[in-house]
Length: 436
Image (cartoon, rainbow, N blue to C red; front, side):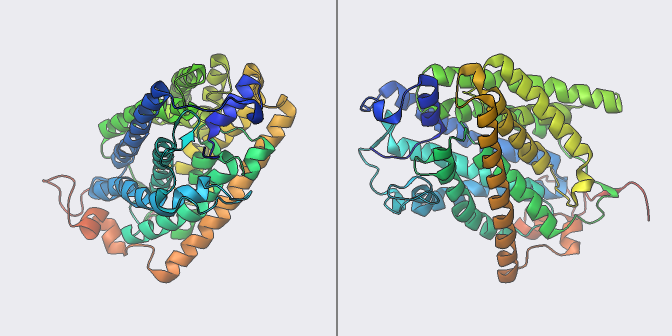
């Protein structure tokens, strides 16, 4: 049996009150396997959903390039995960920092089980997580980062940052796993990591032309709503699938993945109405995504009422971070740090504060300290690592497109295509709203 464990295994140990040594010998369960096959497909759908979400928020002349960053992440990370990413994250014979190399090319998984499902299904499910983690970062650098530079950075980031962090948190050998950090479905591994890396990338690249005097408005709000809906749908597999079984743990994760985003959506609209007088469709979509992010680390560790609290507080923290984004000193184009980094941090910390509601983990005080250590470790590792990788990529190739390409839009210069047949080259250029 593979020793690779996810947040689901961690949940089963705490929720069941048992120890790993007391667990029965695993056997293949066809129902659990069927659920995991469906969950993997649901999580895969999230990345095209993110493409619509990000694409709608971008300018029309850069919509294809924005969406391609997400779509191409499927191919890039899918190949790298197969070759070496999985074994770095979950390979047997590793240490506290990195997995062993016994599963290069996904060798050695045939006939093996992870829990009650084939290890090959577990590897595919985890591949979907690695894919969307990279795609999330793209939202911070759209409309100015060269496509090739993003792919080079993304490949290095997936292998040298994402895989080790996944090992720390979800592998039985990982030091954060052994410390007792709770992250059921990726609040630390995916959202904090992607959010912090996105902020660093935006800072290294510099702001878009005209920022902050130019208003870069969403060109297709229906795309945004469609993308948010697809994300919510797929997120049910993302969180509930992390149980690695069709059981009560999965049921709780699915329920909290419903109620926390619902609360976050209403909270975001309330803050919008209080601040500007009118709730917006983009606000509704953003709020529900923030709620999904915030509940992800806690989804099987808290009760539904606690999930409501997490949704409200996560949305509040992210909303006011968006309002103060200029103080961050970086042009995070689609607010990846505010919506994923901040909500991920809030969710991870509230997991420690509220896990007592299901008798998970340690007492609130000690568990909160463990969660804080996990958050700080993720922020430091991903922030510093992303900075180094971006500087390295900058030495190997140019990071940013020319000013002319940026103003004219990324689609024609990067892909020789246009998102809309009646579109002219400069359509969707930033609108200057004040100043010289």
